Image 1: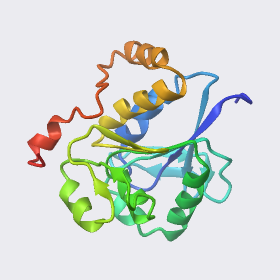
Image 2: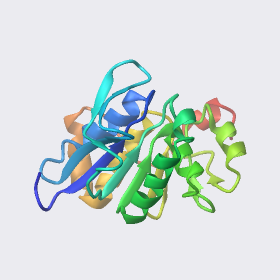
Image 3: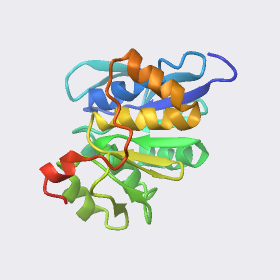
Image 4: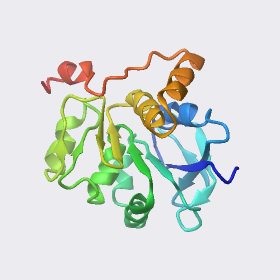
Length: 206
């Protein structure tokens, strides 16, 4: 690690979605010397993903170092994670001190359940959108959006949308050249328009 690098904490919980984590981490993790990535879970150690492979959490929430950036993935496990009161308390504390706090897909549920999105704009996976919209009515849900920026909070649509969100955040933190370079390096076609959202139409939201 370097003294000048930002630290990105990625939250893991049982049955998290692999691409929600590793899409953004592929981008942030290639910012050598600028961003250090750590995995955080309720407790340190291996955490099972929804797809099966386990990922090792470097820290538990009790011994996690200071974080500049925060990323919360979605996945089938969010339904249990929103009942983890210790994790929700930790998120409230860490979001308050983070420079940027991001969610991918149904990871937005954790921010919503923690009350972090009350009165704020946010988006999520379009296949499950109406459920979240009904469950957390205090959130101003944006039906057609690849990602939504609301101050330091950035929420994205389903799974692969996290990559576009990550590149947009990197463009603001580091510069657009860095995002362009990362997209080229990974041969990824970056959707730069936050309002680009064909899946909202697919799922009858607009």
